[in-house]
Length: 489
Image 1 (cartoon, one colour):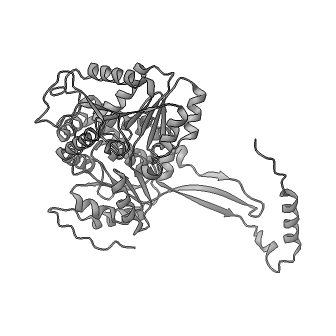
Image 2 (cartoon, rainbow, N blue to C red):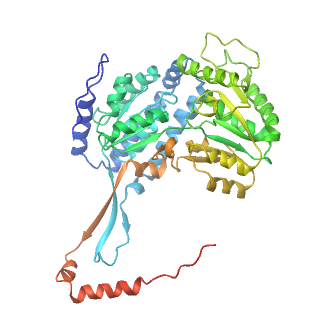
Image 3 (cartoon, rainbow, N blue to C red):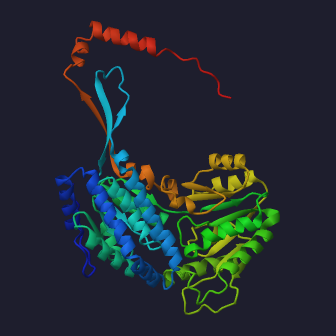
């Protein structure tokens, strides 16, 4: 079905329909790219990351006004190289058709599952990790044999322009292409009849994207975030918990969809945790204003939103504790100090909406059951972090709570583990990419039954009162008798 013509008022707006049509025609001409072709496409991306490392770091830092180079290396470049390496090593096995069980009613035959490329994948890129969250789903899409169109974020324009230049130097437009532009382009992009659409962003916008995709019955992968809790058990050392949580929360100044959004801390140890957290943050970031290691907020609009969240909490009675070791004046910059919020209540914005910035509420609990009930009483988050050396309790935590992913005694690192799926559940998203699940997500698992020269159906065909059909019923009756139900313990 062709998309309705979408006029975009933005100057120099791309012709999205023409780009999609070209890619769809290319898919028809090469519906199942060879293993060698897929590896070639991945290797081009691998080399481009190495060749453009410094430019990527500079562009992202320009968009943020300051992004720590090490954070870009770790989160945007190293993880992508690992992801490409994962598929290079395993792609041949993933592409191989799988033989499946042949039931008696289908014999004689072979039964297989073949993994076919979906076609053209649309990828809507957010601003917080504008290279990783563009190319990570692209890597899975290319490994599965697809073509792709990417819409870069207008809030990271320097990175978007660089990404467009790099991709254009690697691939023909009918293989992979990047489009830039504002809200109108993004809206038109999500309305296109892609074969699959990947969106990373807020839950609110995710609903709009899913509604637009539904008009074309386009399947979606949504990575939406939410309020990811960090739960610290009473037996766990508060200093150790503070250090590990601080790494994930301070990274990119908390502008991560899987950042620890709030901490559930034993009531009697809230002050111990807060003191330890303040000490470790101050040690790692002894100054803020001119510190190249401390990332700024992406836009003034986002900074104003975060300041409003703090003001709301303060006016409603919460205690606000900024961690600013030198008490620097940060006006004129987009930097915000990491700030703890104590005594927050559910009527405050800080405990209602995803924070997505350097603000950490610390919520007390009395029993572990109470902490679990607190998490389960809210929308299912993209990540959950639990700190406890006891493996049995940790195992129970993973079973009794629902989240997109889990880290035990760590934060955010599960995103970099290439052999496990990354994805949300419910309000935190749907679908997966990374690893085997990423390949499957961007493939059509097509069931294929192959019959030989013997037509077994002719022996059981009507009239149904024949010997072969009666025999088949008898065999089935012997194989599938009523089961005695054993009560589960």
